[in-house]
Length: 199
Ligand code: ATP
Image (cartoon, rainbow, N blue to C red; front, side):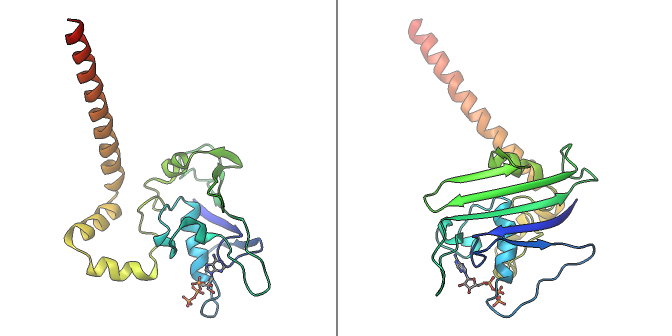
């Protein structure tokens, strides 16, 4: 799997559609302070489903939409697409090229697309889980994260090690199963209450 291109439009400082092609080898993004380098990384994180505006240096999710400049009016929509070469089928899907897209409107409407077909955020999260790019992964470390990890408590550091070791996926599945068990137990209790009443 390889990130082939990043397509950004209306996201933070990228008012116009901007396409970054990642060539073979290492891709570096350089530019003066405030030119939008971190915004590119945040665009990747956002397209992969980041739900925390704080992780994207904002207060609300609508802060990711281009908010205007001296000579341009604010926009109503942010959109980011990531195209992955999946010839090696590292991502668990038959597609040899995978494109994920996230769209967000100022009124709060939101859409996720997988190869241009509308899908659920959960489907995207599932696709990237444990690939090194998924939710909670450590492949994107923002400037503040380093301090957070170093200054964090034992539990926080343990979570970092568990993520790196690939345990995160199982913990998440365990939490989901426990939730389902609790719900099922509540249903069983309810049925036995009703059976008791009918008695
Ligand atoms: P540095 O080298 O200082 O870390 P950088 O190149 O990483 O800077 P960013 O932090 O990515 O730069 O970009 C900051 C710029 O993005 C600021 O000029 C800020 O005004 C602009 N910006 C952030 N959010 C928005 C938004 N919603 N609309 C328009 N511009 C925005």
